[in-house]
Image 1 (cartoon, rainbow over the protein chains, first blue to last red):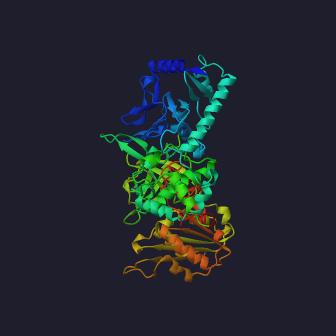
Image 2 (image 1 turned 135 degrees about the horizontal axis):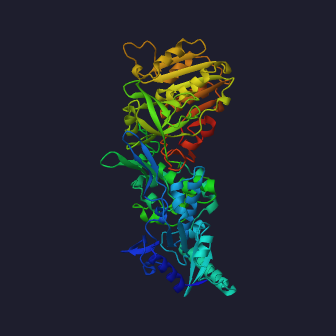
Image 3 (image 1 turned 60 degrees about the vertical axis):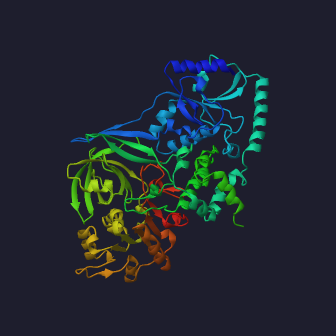
Length: 343
Length: 271
């Protein structure tokens, strides 16, 4: 347990020392992750930020190498990062990060991601009410963080109940934390039971069982749902941009005006765009919008779900909210596939 | 080295092969061999322009040199084709799964190449022909759109003249000098007599070709597991991260580009 005052003073102290602390802040009528000047700026609870905080680890534009052309070519790898604290993020985004940890570590370790990851302190906050009407984290068993966090705070009035996820997290609060008493733990359990009831009541239902989603997508690969939703899709890619687990990227070279120096960077890319699968000959392998929508959903709830044992949709609800024609929401799609399934 | 950091290489030779194709001989500055298998690809960088994947066209070698053939249709391919001997470029790889010669040893082999498909197949064909006695009969079928688009013409002549290779070619559209077969590649099948069960068939060509060639092979009772393909996709990163080359749940850059047909035939996005 820590007192809120002590904890916030600790963070404000870090900010004064120059440490970069990023947290959800209110922006007009919406919210976004931003570097904060004081813990007073933090937006606790809802609304959900428009974009997930993945850019702290996987920036929208991330330099991979710098190069010098000219008579001799020189290449400098750009593996960069600096210590940052990400405070006040919800479980859906922490779980999104833990999924990204898997994919960027798999086989070929992506040092550009992990350099930033090692320097990031992730402090989450327990959601006690749904942060948006679009969210469905409870249906994706993603109301609590699975792993990969440093600290996890639950608001108990004047104090936070703090769950410690790492040594880094433990040492951060070592001076101000007290052991939770039996009654604190009992109170936490009661709060979470109540929270589960609230989420179960307020969040939209997932009709198929969560674990059956890969099978549902596999068996309904040719469902009319894809064609119908695809016909309304603008191929704008917003769903990919806001998602905590979309990580596809393009790689491009940019040169200085002197044409001697340049950088190769990766840029967020979107599997919903026509050109995503286009090759130099002009062939486009996923030309149909419905097929692209099916691919996006299949990655989240089938291909990567089967591979890693966890759905790659943590139910944050951002894509459904961002979608201009309201056709992309993975929960809606799963329910529609389920209701119209064959047999 | 990070996974996105290329090693430097020098272009030793640039040859004009057709109006749009250029043949490049490349040498790694490290002095080490590329260490590739036939069918594997490299990500090739022209710094300031970008990076693109190419299957290596030469057979495996101890030397630090290897060969690519590029069609100048995009930014990177055009920049590569316009390079001069001595120019430096970047190389990452080799990446992906290539052809495993152990599957072919002692067997009859039928190579079916369409257009640029000959480029990766050439690496395998020469690996086989360089130790010819380890293999049974060898058939090569090659099709191009027009006679002037035929690649590696000296080598085609060599295959035509050899007694230990049965070579046939075709073009979709002939010209005044073309004496050979005219028609799509499947029109060559009646010209060869091969044992469908004893033959391993390797098919590499443009996306549209696979469906027709595989149907022809299946009509001739070639078992699915005897058919090998190399699939083209946008392998942007080469290391299974960027997502561009995905076919359903597989990554071409990791699980391919070479596949046994049986492994991919049920993937709706594959062929």
